Image (cartoon, rainbow over all chains, first blue to last red; front, top):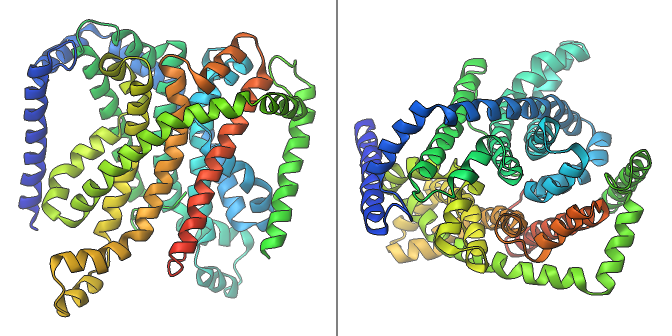
Length: 253
Length: 249
């Protein structure tokens, strides 16, 4: 299929979706599901009002602290687990347990532990994203071609050189994929935590859900969607820049 | 080798529990209960059948939502994976919807389905359906071309190709999709019970939170982790049994 064909089909898909949305919205009414045209008008209103963007910025800042911590802890841990059998055995059972635990179920416990402020939100985001980063990095570190390492060793490379010049470049794709998966989970966790204690952007979603019209609610969801897509694309582009040999690697978690 | 791994993992878990016990000793019981207190809580409330009964009730909406998601996502995933046109048309839409955190749909689900069983089932459905859809369509797209070409060369019809080539070749992805969906369903199970009217295990957690009972909260978390891991490992074991030719690392 040519590029033109593909793009026109993609546009057609979007147009069809918008039309279906408009028609279904007209039939169901604004209180149940606002049609696209109403949401566009409402969205401009939301942008002018400024509350939405202010709350979003505040929430994202806190989320990034948690996500940053998750990367700082998760990436070295994943590498250590992938390259050392002892670390693997020591941490693997706990990582696989943490990764299946629901973020929502952690919320009450973390409220007891950290209150419901900054530390709480950072901790929730950390717990939601760190283990995906660990597992992706781990799969990458385990799968590094032994031949590459052998070549480096036979050229008498020091341990440090092997790590920085062979292992790390081979790991870039996985680090970036891990960060992307982690970021998706971080954004989800941010909204979960905020909807539970009703603060920030999640709190705004909760409050807006009580309105008579669903148009502002849909507007908030669209913003969230754009943030998530932008973050994902941003990391993808950054990945291509940093490591041109980067291609999508999916590790089964 | 396998035997040794089991022993080492057990040791790791024991070491973690000891560490937790030592850390918890520094905190008030309200904030962080030691594992011994959690075990006592679990035992006391399991023997009265309270926790098993709540878990059983929780599985109702989880199973229904999961099955609905499988029924919708698997055929759609095959369609998107095997038809270039359908993929080009719907992939951007699916990606866009997938990137919205599911929990943000809760206000909508309240408006459409109320606060009880239907709303919980709907949340489980939404939480699993995209993960399954994305995995199945990626799998169906990546089926080796040569396999299909050989099937065609031997004069296989459309239906034959699907049943004898495409379907068996997609089974590994199908299983991965079912497994990812299953883990998401267990996560959605408790989320749904906390974000609509609190019921079953969600209500239990809320009550524990209100009386500052961290042992109760950790007991439910333990149950959830075990159920999640059992679901995941169970499907992995089934996969090894049914698809011996597919080696998963």
